[in-house]
Image 1: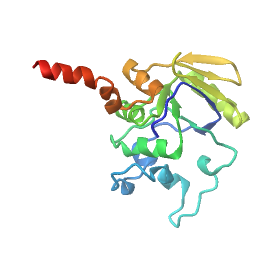
Image 2: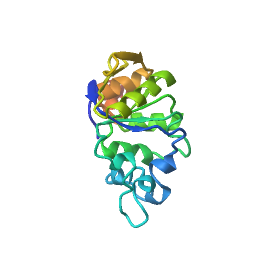
Image 3: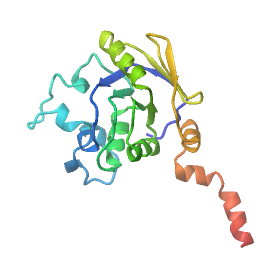
Image 4: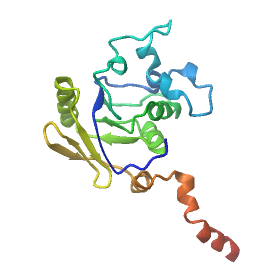
Length: 195
């Protein structure tokens, strides 16, 4: 899951629902594990599968027309509890970015810590993107993290998106917080020797 993120172009999986909470992203009964492995299999579990485990055909993740490493979701994505497992499930499924018009703060940070880029766009851009994907599931979107732009290739329209400078550096370089600190281990040790 720890991968560099610079410029990625992909098709998208559309989920035009607002207020998707972390319990819908990964139901609470799957939170017993402390290892990230396998969480992607249960992403949106109760929307993807019936109680007997058979797929719900009309749910977007079960529709072969939609694929790609970007999830496009409605406003207020990741609200609810602060479970990091939701970000584990998104990353484990293979999504590299989630595009929405608003993210719950804790979930946004959990995504960043798990090498998933939360791309916040205007409601107008989001609505247009949903319309393009509905008209053509092969619609391409380009996310350029160094420039902090997202572009709908179907219309040519681009928007800037915000990101914390530290987290941007970590994603571009493929570093988690420990890796970042380890880059300065010589300076840290030198400082400690002086004390």
